[in-house]
Image 1 (cartoon, rainbow, N blue to C red):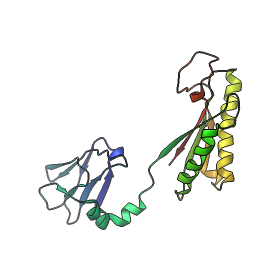
Image 2: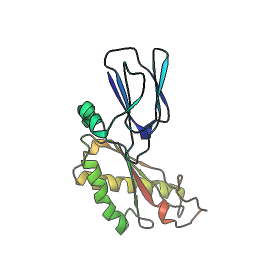
Image 3: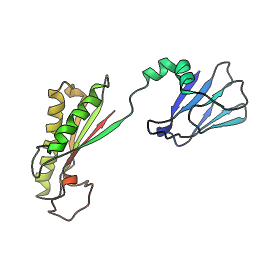
Image 4: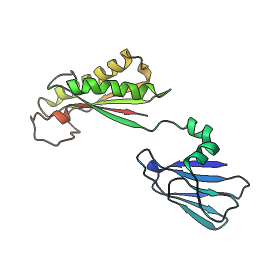
Length: 194
């Protein structure tokens, strides 16, 4: 048995590992270098793994430090099979419309490149508005912004059934404002890719 645990998703995990001839537990750092902590318990003994590539093997009474190369050699097939880490993108819109800003038009290519690297992506596209205008009109505009982004993705080859869309209107601003305030950072679509 082997267990690979990525650091970004783990604050603390306690594993109770039954005695066996080949069990191994290793902690991987996240893409940004963060390392969580894993406590492995075997036969009443506890082993704390809180460093990158910390390794606990059955039959060893200490935690050892592996190299990235050793982990790749031991767990290569498993590492290749791991799902991609979630990614989040934000695109911004011109006032009162579903037209992307010039900067976001360029960012859209980066979003597409990330999505195309995933064999079976799950994508959530969530539209938002600023507080200018009527609440119901902003609900419709946020939904239209999400649909526009979905259409861009589908036109570029992303399967439509992999994309969920929603509009939140002005209810979830990044920058809290009073009513009828034109705030560019609130006129957005958030794209969450898993």
